[in-house]
Length: 175
Image 1: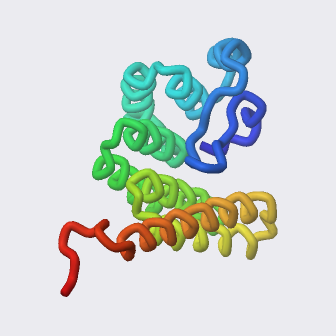
Image 2: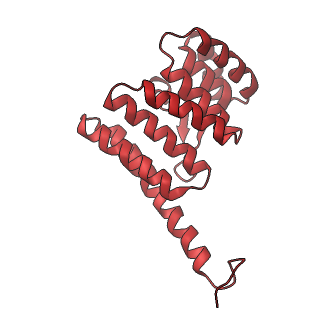
Image 3: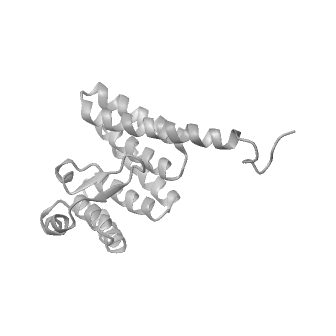
């Protein structure tokens, strides 16, 4: 989810682009003291998706600054394969972004959703967009993370294309 102060608690797998807990004990200890979006994401990564979703929706109703909550909730829905619901929250977040860096964050998250949906070319385009926005604002580390995600998406897009080009792999082989 990209909350920098918690990176020691979770990492993103380079192959799947999915976050995973590195230190469950430390993650559980941090939950009572961290900001709400981070708390919800930690709960999700610790297997408490349903509770995180319920709490997040309640917080969203009263939030004066909902961008991070929208992204976390979209991430939870995405992990539950509720692509359409996650996409709607991403669109709301995009409308609220307001700055290039915040838009880049949303674009990266949209890329992650599309990647999970195996829409690798579309994901790569969103990661590229995020990277460009980050780079223009001097956020080179974040741009590099979006670049790495973009390259992984292109790898899988190429593999997908190769699969469908190989003989016998298509349900409707041509003449």
